[in-house]
Length: 86
Image (tube, rainbow, N blue to C red; front, side, top):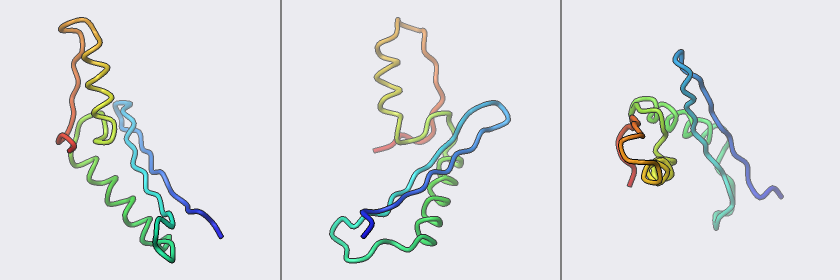
């Protein structure tokens, strides 16, 4: 019995930015894993949402980006992010 599986989608833009999205299927209380086809659809929709939001940092890593910017000298960091994650 497999503990789960996942997939990552990665793309590079013509300007060199790397965009990614990940999805995982685990047993976490459910008796059956999510179907691979459903997981693929979920990963693709999540990936398209990241592209739609724009920015060069995905919503999962925004917090880390802001911490690193705060540690830099003043007025050194400039970033473009999409919609802020909650």
